[in-house]
Length: 79
Image (cartoon, rainbow, N blue to C red; front, side, top):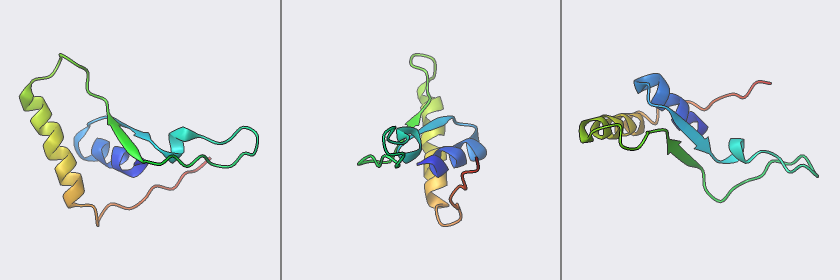
């Protein structure tokens, strides 16, 4: 999900947020990663601001990233 959000921004400037392992964080007691059931991406699109044409651009950008999914590599987290 994090890679998809990053690639959407790089390819089209569309902001998105990963809602999965990265944003789930770690268990404070054990320090282990939390693994949610789903890896999701939230598109950061304000309501009542954009037209259908804007939404079409977003849909086309998501499709373009999907079509290039074999080219897109994962991210390396660096602390």
